[in-house]
Length: 473
Image (cartoon, rainbow, N blue to C red; front, side):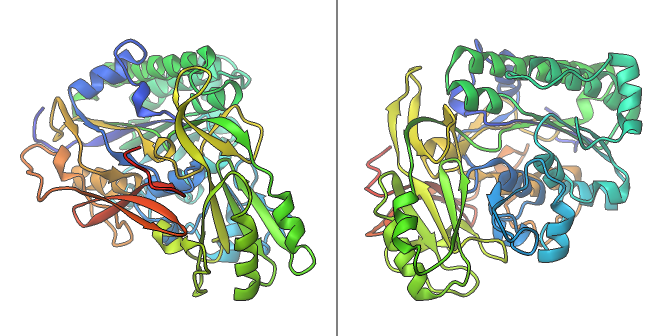
């Protein structure tokens, strides 16, 4: 691969794709891409390992304490004082920006626009994940193709050529095929954006409904691979392949579900003393106190930690102390007006599920498989780079994370990297660059839990949290 810089980027996100399922048999296109690019074998999502917070981290190269989003579901009383707020399908991004000043961190798309380029978002994911990739899209007029965010004017020319947008399904085969064709046949050759982000809602949707490793979930992975090929072929047909950096990533990993969590007894035990708002996020749960104080928070944490299925709890935001029996939320790089008073991750193990796939967890919900927690299986996620300036046929064992993607993309494009992008440039993937130093891996144990870390290039990555020592899991 030439050491010349790319002039544009194709980023395809396979929502919920766990990297240990990538293979020449199941994902031939992605496996072949990795064979002529750089595969990151130790890439990590941020905790909680849910979509919107990781989409924001990927787009901004910044941690939650900077971009301001704590999870998929959280409490924002200035927007809704009665219940937790989901940023999935609602029109609440503008309200949250006005009320809390979040989503101000610059994104890849912002920098590209400031330097005269354009971004196109093609997404079958939730409205929230699409918004997080480019919160100022409407302000600058960049294109989006999304079932509910696109305007009639944006969809009309695509519908005229490809037919109606298919209804959503699980797996979402027909809708994702339509969007892949739109990207390959219309957006790339006619818009020629400097950045195209294609967010593919499977395998996440299928895995939630059917389970991790279920035949229909595996079909959803095959779909994603087939749709990747369609877009790569579209790049080739448009004459853009040789100048394009291709990124294939996932926002988080996955686990099977082997237990359901009930926080009712813990809430009942404190009901007379405090109002608690619970915001479930799959295999993690956020707790907000109406009028937080240290005594109340310590009591809530003590009760929550007795619940079967709770692995670890975190506290200490907005200057509040870390209460006994909990870990600092600063370890998750979380703070700000929307951060919870208490965050709990749920118990997990390396056991296999009914489909023979390792990694299971408790969940506060009804999904057959899920994510959100701090297991090694949820934190570890997919990242492959291929294109101009990227080494060929290399697998990197050096630790990396979702926050490193934005500064790496901008550096490869030769564009300025904002100070808010605190992730590191993944120099180990670049032609002619030599890794500096060695990675370090260690564990920290206390009565509040055991944390596994890795470190490289001055950046530290959380790789798992457990109540008991991890013992090589």
